[in-house]
Image (tube, rainbow, N blue to C red; front, side):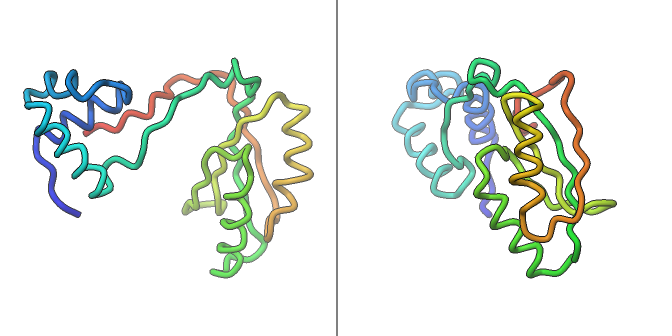
Length: 153
């Protein structure tokens, strides 16, 4: 990984707050000429600092008001079992994030669904049928306190 400078960090911070900012506005905010800004943007993308751009949708407006976190334990903690579970969970559209963790369980899954009835179907028909799943513990979210996803750079 290459080193980024102070200006690169300012560019990345601005983009986290507004990914649709124009090149000219971004250049003005960080004190660069638009041509230099374009060069830096291409470099930051090529080097993998910028993974992509996307719209952030309102889950409530999309009918996905239920957010749940699910602890998942596998029956065997073998490399093959981990790989099978990971491959299968990546295909589930309800799963927003899935992280292998150290501790009392194997994976922490973050999922969005319409409501608790749909979650019940997801749990029985999808999650518990994934390869190697032994048990799960679900934590429905009552209130989203912080969900901005801004990295402290």
